[in-house]
Length: 232
Image 1 (cartoon, one colour):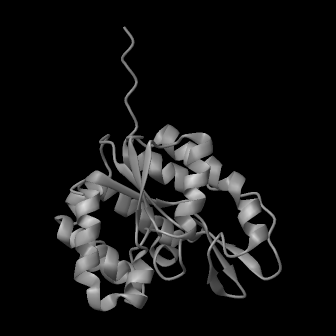
Image 2 (spheres, rainbow, N blue to C red):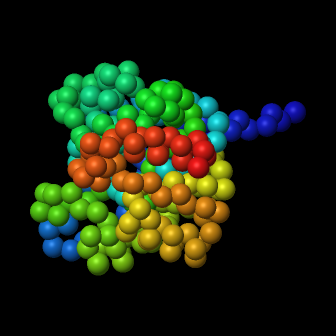
C-alpha cells in the first residue's frame, strides 16, 4: 500500500526557491545584481532562520518589498533583518559585524508590537517583487529606478511570484506591499493583468518612515499592526 507523499514544509519551499534564483536580464552600465544567497554565510544564516520560524505547513500572508538592500538581506540573507536583529531578536548567532540598518529597526519594532518574531513569522512571509537586489556603481538601486532595468526585470519578477505562489502555502485573498508609491503602482498593474491576489494593501515603506517620519515611528508601527491584523 502506497503512503501519501508528505507535504513540503514552508522552510524547505522558501530555501529551495531562494537557492535557485537565476535571473536572465540585461544590465546597463555600472549595474550589478546583488544575490545574497550566492554568499555561503548569508545562505547558511537564511536557512537557519527559515528552519527556525517556517518549519511547518502553515499558510502565510505575503509581504512584498522592493528588492534586497546591501545591509539587511544583502548581509544576512533574511529580508529586513540586520545582524543585530538576527542575533538579539531572532536568536541566531553570527560572526557578522553588528551594524544596524534603518529598515530593519522599523520592521522589528512592528514585529515586537505584533507579538514577537514567532507570532509574526507564523502569520507572514516577507519577500520582494525582485528577490534579488541591484547596485549601480556600488550604490543600492531599486529595480524601478532605471527604465531599462524595470523593463528587463519584469519577466524575472513574474517568474518569482509564480514560483513562490506555486510552492509556498499562502492565501490569495490579500497580500501587502511595502511602499505606497512606485512599488505599489507597479505591483497593482502586474496584479491587474495576472490576478495573483484579490487585494493588495499598501504600507509606508520602512526606509521612508525612518528617514522622513522617524519622530512618528510609534504611529506608523500602529498603522502597520492594525492593517496586518485587518483592524482597519
